[in-house]
Every structure is written in C-alpha cells, then in structure tokens.
Image 1 (cartoon, helix red, strand yellow):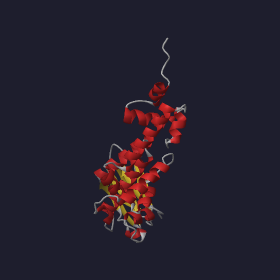
Image 2: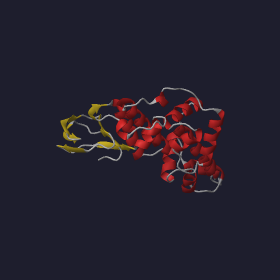
Image 3: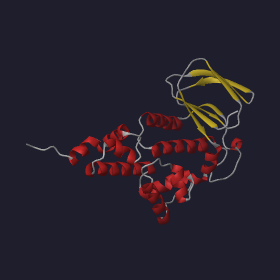
Length: 251
C-alpha cells in the first residue's frame, strides 16, 4: 500500500509493454515516452514490465496536496484519480526540467518551484477537487512583500523553500508563487539567485575571502556550484572578480 501519492513519468525513448494490478483490477498496455501513471496514496498495486526503461518517479504527500487545496481537509483517496499510461506533454516537460536541474543545480527554489508546478498540474488534471488557489490573481500587499524580502535577506546563506516564503506571507504555496511573480515580475527563485550572486560578487570583489567561502556564505553548495551559476547568468567567473580585486602589478 502506497503511503504517498506516486506520479511516474516515462522518460525513455521507446514504448514499453507492461501489466499492472490496482486494487485487484488488472490491466495491461504500452507506455509511450511522455506518458504518466497516477497511483493515489493508499492504493494496493503491483506492476510488471517486459523490458527495462527509464522513468522519473515522484511522491507527493497528502499534506502537501491539502496545502494546495487551500487547506481543505479531505482523505488522500479523495484527492487524486488513478490513471495508467496517459499522454501528458505538460508533465513530461516539467519532468525533463526537474531532471536537468538535479543534474546541474542552479537554485534550490527553482527545483521547489518546478515540483510545485508539477503537483499543481497533477491536481488540476487528475484531481477530484478544484485547486481554487490558482483561479485568483492578485499581488502581495506591502506588508507581505516586506516580510518575504526580509526573510530572504536574513536567510540568504541557507536553503530557502517556497513553503517557508509562503508561510511568511500567510498564503498557500501555489497562490504565493503567482502573487510573488505578479508583484516583482519574476519568480522567487530568480530573485533569490540574483541576490546570492550579487552578494557573492561583492564579497569576491571587496574582501580577501576565497571562492569556496563566498559560495557557502551565500547558500551555494560549493565552489563549482557558484562558478556554474555565475558563468551562466553573468557571463563571467569568480576568478575574474578576484583578479579585479587584485590586479596584476605591472613592471
């Protein structure tokens, strides 16, 4: 019996034939690249495949789904409908982005945002209840904006999450992401990444700290993570900033 909702996306290059038994009901068929399987929490299931193939498997807690449903309490079995081998280009695209982000991380909030978008898509397409948080537009109030920005500034050296920022604003995760973008004209992860890079750049240009120290001081995993992000977004490297700080002495 599954203890969380499971969402499986086929990321292979060719169809594969499989069989499954969900709550005693048997089925079989081909799973094409980009097709998805939705297995709700609490379901008893068994699967078998005739050949190996590549998948991306996600698990979402019922608690997270309740947050996306504006806190409306409902049993896990009432949150999602079971589906097998359904074509889903949106889920496939989001999954490819998540896999790419895992391979070459940029900003933790970006991964959070992608997973949140996938969970929202899951509820909107396969859910039993409407995700009301996504129907309403609007911006953060001045008080909410100051609280969120102050929280980001105070925790820029650590891991920030969409859930934590949403709590500061007193909003659901899904509503917060839309309100933040409407307020600041960019998603949370992009603003946070820019602030991290700017702070690291100032440290490297004005102090004697090492690249590794600057990286961990602003929330990057390590020196390589900072170097990759700086090259990707600013077209330069930490070494260039250090050379600017300590220009060579000309004879």
